[in-house]
Every structure is written in C-alpha cells, then in structure tokens.
Image (cartoon, one colour):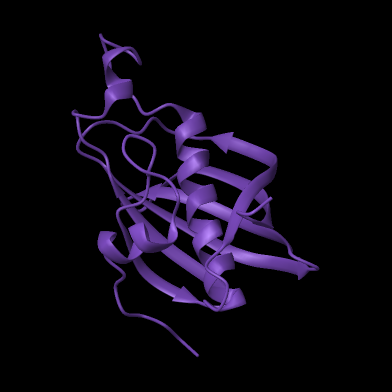
Amino acid sequence: MDKTDNMDIRKILQIMPHRYPFLLIDRIVEYRPFERIAALKNVTINEPFFQGHFPHRPIMPGVLIVEAMAQATGMLAFYSDGMEDRDRTYYLVGVDRARFKKPVEPGDQLLVSAQLRRQIRGIYQFDATASVGDTVVCTAQLMTTEMSQRQ
C-alpha cells in the first residue's frame, strides 16, 4: 500500500521520542511500508549547533545528517511493523559507508530518503541518502532495531 500523504510534525511527535533540539525531521513526504521513506528537514540559522559549528561558516554537522537519516528509518520501521504496539522504539545500531559529499548550510532543505534493504527478526538494514535540491550531500547504510520502551 503506497502512502503518499504528507505526515506533518504533529504526527511525527506522536511516534518519535525525540524533541527539540534533537528532532531532526519536520515532515514525511512519502512512505511505503517495508520499502522506502522520504522526509524533510528545514535547516535554519536558529539551530543551536550553528553557534559553534562553525561561527565563520555555519554548516550542519555530518553526525546530525546521519541522525536525521536514522530518525527517518525509525519512522519507516515503525510504520512497517504497524502501530499496534506504541511502546516500541527503534534504535540506531549501525552506520556503515557514511560519505559526506557537500556541506549543508542554513536555508537548505534536506531531503532524507531511505530504502529498506533487509528486515529480519526486528533488525532493519537501509540504504539512505540526504540531498539538497538535486545534489546528494550524504550517503550511508544504516541498521536499526526495535526495543520495548518498558525495558
């Protein structure tokens, strides 16, 4: 079933445990359970990390680009599993082949896309990219796993 409806920040906040300043996706623009997801992050000069990274030329830290990718993959895993158990959280457990190709600056809109490569026993493997416009700024392979929040 193809889900192309936008999922706004209110819906994301119902599912994600992250909050400001660490919630790094603003909108889901497309998702297809067990296949793919696309999410947006509006990068503004008001982000707290720009004060120190770097004052002379503010750029989004690469680790936060990867975190935005991880948050999108967590959302895809959640929607792939269904919403029956809201006591589940998806944790990033692996990052492989991360490559940063161009800086992300204030005013950019980051499009994070992820394709599910494999899912077995609660472990998900993804190929993820982050782009600004038509330019790929980061690629990585990510792995997430599900855990009960009760643990």
